[in-house]
Image (cartoon, rainbow, N blue to C red):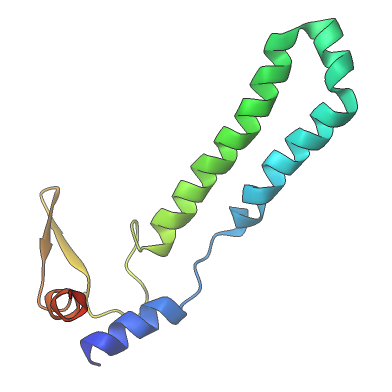
Length: 109
């Protein structure tokens, strides 16, 4: 398979990340809870809990989106059927191999 074929195959493979649905749902759930019970929570527990709830739902969503992005870029596992395209990881260093360099040079203006 050519370099372009490897890149197209990588884009076509779905990422297995069932938590992706939580990315928009966490802030939505936080907004619903604060919208319905925020005034009562603030009166009984104080502003700290209300603020922490609002920030924590958005922060958790952000962390999940970073994780989903890392998984979609292939950080963490080699795709099945791959011939080693991408980058070589040696002693914590990332080096270009012959599969990635032609793609990058052809994309540059």
